[in-house]
Structure formats: C-alpha cells, structure tokens
Length: 120
Image (cartoon, rainbow, N blue to C red):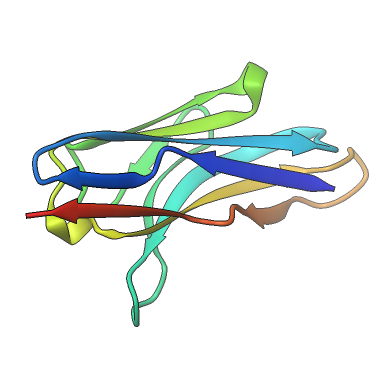
C-alpha cells in the first residue's frame, strides 16, 4: 500500500503565503513524478505544478508565485505559494507517479486533498 499525507492548507489573506507538503510512504521502489493539482467546485482538476526531480512544470497562472520542490530522501513534495490571490482558492491534491516494486508498471496515487482559501 502507498499513502500520501498532505498538510499545510488553510485560510490566508490575499498577498499572503502558504506552504503545502505531501509525504509518500509505504511500499515504494522508485518515484517518477511528484506534483500538485487543484480543483474548484464545479470545475475540472487542473495541474498546478509537477517535477520529475530534474524538470519542473507550472501552470501559467502560478508562474513566478509558486515554487515546487521535493526531498527524495523523505519522499516528500512541497509547494511554496506566495502572493496568493482569491483565484487560487481551491482544494489542492498531491499527485505521485511511482513504482511499488521493480517488476510492476508506474502508477498514479493521489492525496486526500487540502483546502486553500484566499480571502480578498
């Protein structure tokens, strides 16, 4: 089994900062991609940022404000969110693509989601 535990969401005023964390644990052989998605009510889940350890991708809406990083020793991915805007309000989901053993294919795993609310 693989578990993803997220933390760091909450309520913040516009212009403020939050840092999300997501730790993967359990039966893990190797991790490929780690990232964050977000979803507003009634809308599709969208990519915020992801990284394969070398390259990073960001949604245009967060470039220059959000920074993704990972600690491979801890199987943890972080999302530092600065200059937050009300439009960033959403449930943020951690995403990890990994192998549980060397003999199986990579699979996607998702965290339970953490609410980020930015007030104006």
